[in-house]
Structures are given as C-alpha cells and as structure tokens.
Image (cartoon, rainbow, N blue to C red; front, side):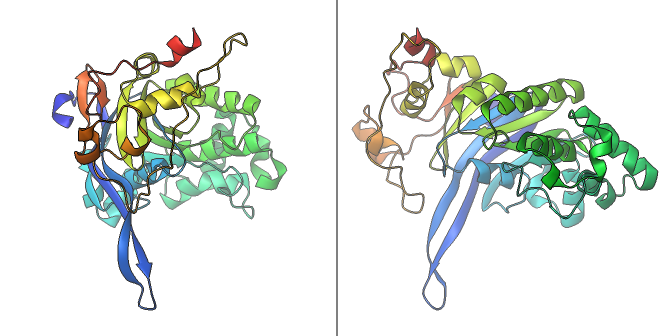
Length: 345
C-alpha cells in the first residue's frame, strides 16, 4: 500500500504493524498463546489532516495509538515519522536518547481527564513538566509559557496555582490538551478524548481541537468508537475489527459508499436526525472474534451476511479499490452496501 501513496505530504507511515501480548498460564508462567491486539495493520497519515480510527471496544484502537508513540513496544512492523528536525525516522529502531528527542514532536491526549492528571500537582507543574523534562524552559519563562498555553485552550492564567480537583471534566481535558501542546508537537494521538464528557462539552472540545489544528498546523490520529464524533472531526476514517484494518477512506466517501460489511453495520447504528425516519439497523449475529484465537480467513466472516467460501478460508488483504479508498474484503467490488446518507434519506 505504501508504494501507492505519494510520500511528499505524509507525516506518519505504518506498514504491517503487529502487537501481540503473551498469554501465560501455570506456576512457571509458560506462554500458551498470544492475544493479537494489532494484527498486520498498515495505514498512513498526511501532514495537517485528522485520521479517525474507529471500531468496537477491544478492537485494538488504543493499542495502535500507543504503539505509534512507542509507549508500548511493537512486536513487528515499520512506523515511519517525518520529524521536523531529523527527517524520516523509523520509530521502533530508535534508541532511548533519539526517542526522547522525537517524542517532543509526538504527543498524546488521554481518554480519562480524571486519572490522566496527577492530583498532587498544580496546573503549573502538570503543563510545565514537559518543558522541564526537556530543558526547554524554567522559572519565569516556564510560568509565562504555561500561562500562554492555558489561554490558548480557554482557561485563565491564574488557574495555574490550582489543583485538578478544582476543575470540571471538560476543564480537565483542556488541561490535558495544553500539556500535549507544551512542546509544539507536529503529531498528536487523541485517545477518545471526548468519550468521558457530556455531549455539550464534547462539542466544545472537538471545536477546540479543530481550532488548534488550524492555528498550529497539527496532525491528529483521533481514536473513537462514536461515528458521529468521527464524522465531525476526521478528514479520513480507518475502521478496525479484531486488530485488523478493514477499511480506510475519506470521511464523506466512507459514510456514503462503505465497501466492507462491518463498516455498513457500524453506519446503520448511527442515530438519524429526522424523527420521521425509522432506522433499519443491521444487527450482527454471534460474538466478536477472540483475538487470541481468531477464525481462519476473514476474521469477520462468522458474523457477515455476505460471507462466501473464500471468506472462510482465505485472509483478505487491504487493497485500493478506488482512489484513496482501501478495503480488506474479498467481495468488495461485487457488493452494493448502504451508506449512512442513503439510510438517512
């Protein structure tokens, strides 16, 4: 797939990424199997865009994001990042010193705005910590930089002496955003940053992220399970199922013309704004495949109403069937699947 994409405007390029967690049993803790959390995933992210990564809980979205930053070591695969100082680098091959330098340009916004902030630290300490650790600023310069960051995310500079317990969930997430911006990164992994917030606050944080992206020319990997959120913020969408990437396309293209049956089922569950329309939701039968013992062939075939014999025996590979539209399905060209717009009128 990577050879088909012009690399001049790419920021992140992932090829055949795998992350397997060992399953151990017995007194000697012998390995009896592996959980394939991320299983041969390939994708790319262009500079300045937002790639939305969506799928059911446990499909490997968060693991993918953390492996990209090497917060978790990958089992196999290539992760290339175009650093503004070092050029193209392979993240898994970096030593500790190089990784520290690269991480200034790769940051993360965490899902839980409560557990991700140290309750014993003030906002000055929380937001200023990356600046101290990387010897970027200290003293009055540090205070001025933290005050500036708080204003950028919509908080008052005098809040820097307060502790996290004094703030609401939405304000705490703004603090997390300020911390991620501290070192002027190029790339931010947003790990379900609005899923723990009220709907009205979700919209505020999403709009803030979009404003910051335009202001600082940021690139996002936005992880979520809510397709409405993904549609609002993403330029392109990648769909995961049991550790595998099953479809990737521009947002409008994917919502209008899904090419994978799993994507079609996800889109059928999106709430429709017209109360006169009764949604024809696709209810998938059976259970999600076990990532420690996935079925042969296509992992989705036990739940797919379009499954053929090839789906049960042959593993599909992600391929480009239309410009910038990639799908991992044996029958993609012959199926006519319904998108959310057709279903919603």
